[in-house]
Image 1: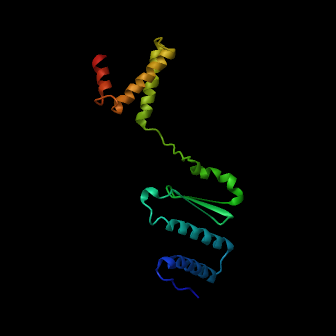
Image 2 (image 1 turned 30 degrees about the horizontal axis):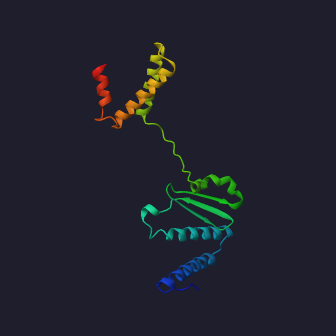
Image 3 (image 1 turned 180 degrees about the vertical axis):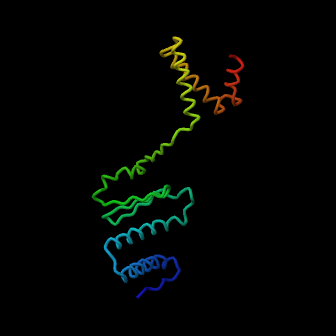
Length: 174
């Protein structure tokens, strides 16, 4: 028989949660169930319990990850990208990189470069080759290109005021 809910008091909240779990297990056991399905139920409930703690947290304090375990298996949820990783304890060493966030490592997402950046890099390469062909080479050429790149960056990000001042200077003086 299914248990009835506990009173809605602070004390009864924990009891109510336990009753809900017992009822879920009872329903699951009323039908044929495999050990694998029971383990899934335990890990699913552990995730639900962890997620229940989010209710009172401000958005900025919500965790990115939830890790649940039944001491034989781990299930790690990455809530930011919706990925779920599950593995046995004996295979933990194969999945240790998943826990890099504990040490402060963040996953790096490599994105394709903006076509404008690629065109700029190619233009700088052509300028390098053209100057080198005229005999302007070595350290002096490298320093010139680094300084030119800094000036272009400063002009684009308004380090030079007003924006476009460097470009205007080049157009007016050369």
